[in-house]
Length: 298
Length: 298
Image (cartoon, rainbow over all chains, first blue to last red; front, side, top):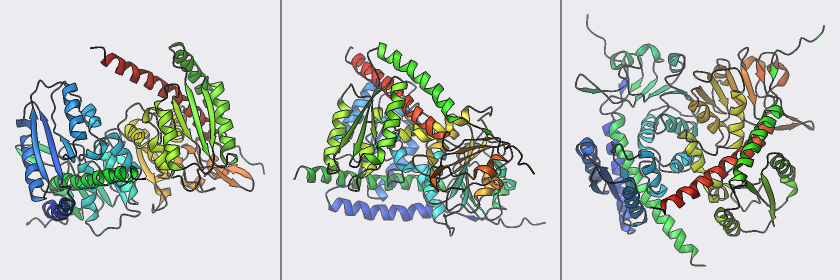
């Protein structure tokens, strides 16, 4: 007996990311012509090997999107006070338009404190509480890259987001919750499920789209999905030396209408979103400086 | 035929508020003993009559909670720049611990711009994007008073919030959405519905608790409620000269397990929450100044 072909169309994150990078490159050129060439600074602390693969990937993406990228590595022994001083210097440097704080950080460095020390206008990762709050307010703002990327992927599908019933599985501050507000802002009816939810399947089976960002391989199975629904898999897990998402691929692909693969789905779009945030941040800074200049004028 | 008694227990907001004010008064005394007597400044602009009833109610509540309250009214013609200057002065004044911006404001004053000009540590209304973002991050923070009050009411009921299925009807930035994150932070499974939702009843009928904050009288009827559920009515509408909520009282009271009346439900708890925020803000400012002092010490 031959296996029937999967029903779901695979969503190609690489193609979506490539299109975004082209748009970013055009905006980066426009900004450069105005004297505001976008420039990112990446901060790693301690063991550079742990984040090296991410940093190199970001640098490569930045270059192809016309965004300058400087990777800095500070020694393991750097104190929190020193790092905050470094960030304050970057916050005040007009030639720096975005700051990325690479994880993991040494144990003595609380990541939230560092993220709050990045000026909200340079917060290209969208991690500052003010950035998150602006998303809640539906203001154009720098959103958390993974959440923004996941929603951008849904927007490429031929579905109207107004009134769409969506379940988000996972309620982390930087992925699940921001996805929920972004979708609410676009008119979707959103349920957020998590490890305390009594029946995730009750919600996900009734949904037109399901986002999953938990970090557990095989968490979402085909019987939890409504036939034809869109499934956006944000999980990244290592199983038997392979990278897989939170979705049990075969059973979900038989039921879903659309499905993001892992790797090659949300991941590439997340890095492209970081570059888009770099140009957004640069334009916001340009306008901020112009506003300040205009105000001294009257 | 006699009408059967309503099934729902009415939740008495006035009693909950009185208990909160007692706790606030104790904290205000403790802060005063440390030299930090909580003090609020209320800003009205233009026609004072429009907000007068709210200001007087806040002042009365402040006095009974041991919080000083100064009501200021500026003329209709005050410019945005002047108001921002006034707020900056209050932000820097250590004798002012909280700032309230009364609505309505004159048409030339954008309320969001003023709210952002209030320092997050003095944002007792919990309206600043950073305050909203901190709620998303589950940080102890100054939350939007109405949302915090509605959740506090649910917490008085004999229900475990972990895994509780909740529907929030209405997705405003300062009520519906913050209720949703506050509940997510407490372990509830939350669905947010709004005017674009295809079937609100499908979600609300499956929920252990329903919050409604839309501003339309009679929006929620008994057939939309699961028998025994808690219904928190945040709406305030004027119908035939009477103040009513968003809930069709009689039909919902026949089905629900608990129900907040309007008036006398969420309203009094909201004002008590404002006073609680005043003491929270005062303590945060005290600690902030001490941290700054400690840092200059080494």
